[in-house]
Length: 404
Ligand SMILES: Cc1ncc(COP(=O)(O)O)c(C=O)c1O
Ligand SMILES: Nc1c(O)cccc1C(=O)C[C@H](N)C(=O)O
Image (cartoon, rainbow, N blue to C red):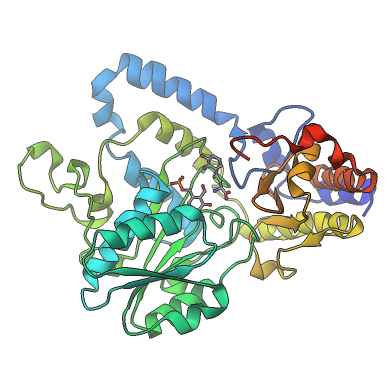
């Protein structure tokens, strides 16, 4: 691959015009959109409107002028990105909070079954929350096993299988329909974490018959730091599953101010407290960017970007831990090296922002909306140069930050 080859791919790229919709700093090649997505140009405008006009001028009247329905409205905008119906998704809280609600709800629903199964090495919050959730349900327990042992771990005591669809470190992707079917065959419900999948790969919860899913919106969806998360519950389960955090916003009539809790119908019962309006304002316009995006073009570009870095990594002698088959991975590429931390810092010093994942992973996010093939080719050249010259050995690159 030469710079000219990369430029030729850019010239033919139907997604290339989206780059102008993002405000990216000069001199930076941003390969961390799988952790914190870039800033859409529409966001500061929307935030100013939400603060100055909606809050400043309209004051409390804004609750009746669009604020109160924002969790459902944004849920309907996320629904097509996961293959759900508009009334099967709600936005609010964090992914961690949604995980807690969904796990406890599944355990209480399946009162004869007591076990939640998940994968060793899953994203920490999934396992931490599962640990806390089982502690809230008498007799419940968490079984965490290696990926190869997952199928055998499902038995007639399994209430729920909890998996992260695309692995945050390696980019390995589970077969959505296949694993959902395995959970169902064992009599369990299936809860997916789509944090590294939504906006990165094509998802179809309806075809896969998934029961529940959660996900972050500040990664590939570019909602902003700490943007509210989403929860999907298949319509067939909505009446039977109960939110254990029975807050007033999930009440059938919050403004009747009753003492007793009566859950709302549909996804509204999964709300807890007052939606974070400024964060929602940012997310809403970020989601609007996805209207009309061709998912096939997105997948083709993600695969092309991956191939460029896979080639550069191989030329540098790095070991790639992400699957070679595009259908078996998400939209990031990871390399394993004992000096991965220093390598990440050396890349950042050259303006290529990726991240390090303990203990030895260099992770590079491939966000087709705002990366060009030439950007990624250039990043690959930096990677090769840093390895070839052993630039990463500079002691300045070994000082650890709090957030990596
Ligand atoms: C798979 C996965 N789940 C959950 C989270 C985070 O959850 P929260 O938004 O609650 O911090 C992340 C990333 O931070 C993640 O990668
Ligand atoms: N949510 C994050 C944060 O608040 C600080 C630093 C990083 C994050 C992340 O999102 C990490 C990310 N989920 C990961 O896959 O590693």
